[in-house]
Length: 97
Image 1 (spheres, rainbow, N blue to C red):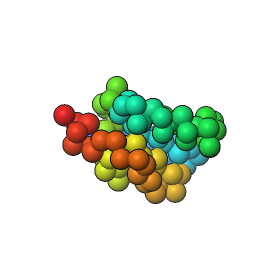
Image 2 (cartoon, rainbow, N blue to C red):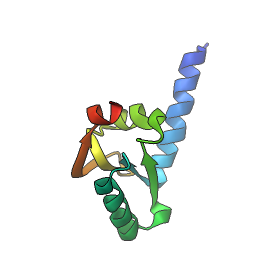
Image 3 (cartoon, one colour):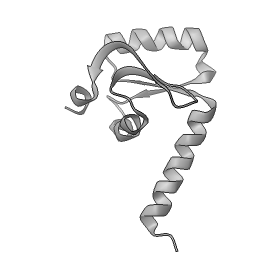
Image 4 (cartoon, rainbow, N blue to C red):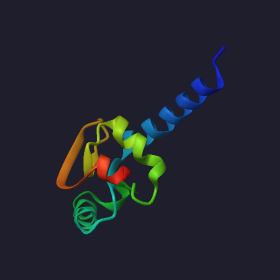
């Protein structure tokens, strides 16, 4: 029998794995460098192909980003799980405060 925590973790992983399978996730912290990169990425890939996550505003997604391999923002997580670090703006340690 699976415990509550195990079920919660599995649901969380399935939810975010399904999202990353169809879209890239663009993580940023809301700084001018990040906003500029966000606009460029959306222009290049199309808004329908990108999930934008401002971890400066939605701090609950920081662990998700780190677990995916994000070391600094802005960063793009591809559907295949590759992390593309773009135009260094802030380390994850800086974002955490």
